[in-house]
Image 1 (cartoon, rainbow, N blue to C red):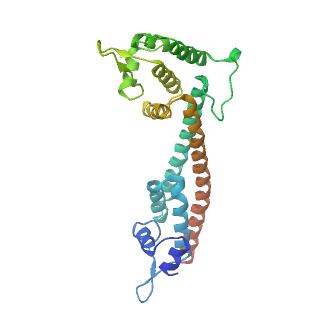
Image 2: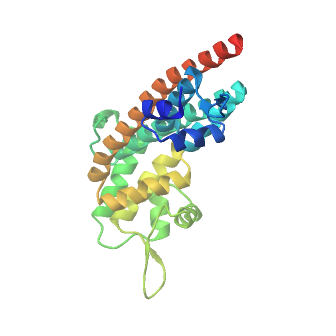
Image 3: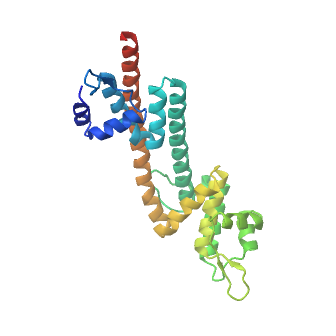
Length: 258
């Protein structure tokens, strides 16, 4: 198979195919008597596998997987695939945690169901009451007041601030922190996410999106897009697994036939 034939089959340039070969993503091409590259069905299967892996695992991980497979290091490739699956599982868990937290704070998410008042958990009751209290209070909360509402140490709130989770304003006269209703909302959400095992960096990202969205309801709406992205990654990983398996079979046949 000529380079141009392989390239056209996958909507690529011949230079891209040569680059993938040079990078070890597909095996070295056979050379004819004139020195021209001659690609086989194995190369076509490898290229198809790589192009399927990219939307499933990203460029960097896909290159690692293909180089390992092409180089005969199957365990290394499978370990990288496992890492991609684990990352998707963690992202799904984060989404569920955020949806549950938003629901407990009064936002309606696409997949959340209302919790009856009689069966509300203490954490949910605390989250809702604290946020309501802040919203109905004219004076901002001080750090000690907010810490008491959350059942935390003020040092924890300072650590959250350093991590970008909370962004309270300062009283221009005293320099003391002032937590307005949105700050209390953010602190409640952060508290729930921390109990769910989320890292401060993840929580800071979520709350940054919340501030950009402007409300819990707006952020809840964006979670549906996040869910669609996760579903796309999941289905892409299924498709990529089939293509990668086909490439492994092609490599095996090539090795047996010499």
